[in-house]
Image 1 (cartoon, rainbow, N blue to C red):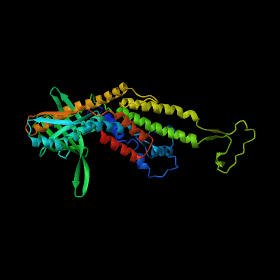
Image 2 (cartoon, rainbow, N blue to C red; image 1 turned 90 degrees about the horizontal axis):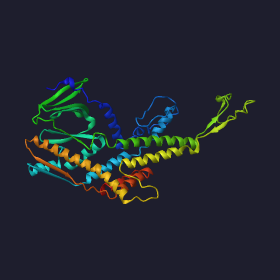
Image 3 (cartoon, helix red, strand yellow; image 1 turned 30 degrees about the vertical axis):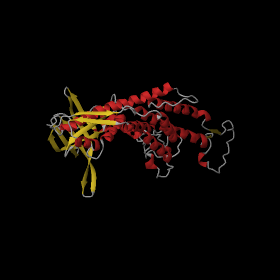
Image 4 (cartoon, rainbow, N blue to C red; image 1 turned 135 degrees about the vertical axis):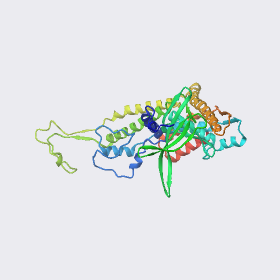
Length: 424
């Protein structure tokens, strides 16, 4: 019997992990600068109030006025490195040939799995690619299996996991949150649901007045928790360091814009303390007080050499980005050796091979549960071809990154991405 008092329990560190996952997902969507799109329709304000917009990813400078900060938000630029790199791995995995073999199932059953594994018309290979991408971004993802009119599989994002535990017999229970659409007439709203899987029963709860109400509960005929987990090597998100550099570059770009603006168009006039600032206007001539010649007015501007360190730091971050993403840039005026390229390809293959291993195991285990709902004991083999097309992979990615960095526009960038996807 499921104890309702335990439904609000969560695994240790869930809030911190979900905050990290949201950041990585925003980066993987190229969406670190999303707040600016809420603000572009508003006019600049000359007020210096301290309230107003706050961006979760653009850091506010110390002593910076709210007006200046809001203008920086509007000019924020997310380079989208995380999205390009994550999508590239996804495209390579999608392009690999995959073979499914099931012993103990009919041809019609196998064809149904291949064409519609989730009951929503998703082919098995597309479903596997989605699980791979979720695992790449989140570090670990889950595949659930259920049975209504027929069995089906579905992805459970890591952020939805509320609690789980293992014992000597494996997975003891699994609890996750999701939202269901509740329709009344022409009104639709999202209702929070909680699913609880144990070896003995499967239950659905819905939230009401800060409490959980049981909607339905059925015996678990499988006598096992129908959830499979998938991870590459550990549960650390592979895109986390890339997303962090993306964040750093966006903030650095905004800081440099402020410095260039100050250097190019703003300077500070330093006046003696005795000058009446209220009398200072565009047409006012200020007479220096007698004996004040020691404290003459002076213009102060940002030193022209001040941006050198910033450019060096940007180059360091970009080189680091290429290294950790397995896309090393060729050094200036130097050709890379065949061995250097081979090493890069080897690192890229290592990620894809680890993903292929994890997906093969997860799909095989999930499909065994799928057929257990039908009372069938089957042998499943799901194989991903390891011959990933990498001959020109790093060069193609570098071209896309270059298009984006020099700002040729969305049309050119979209065309390059489409060409890359069709090729690989």
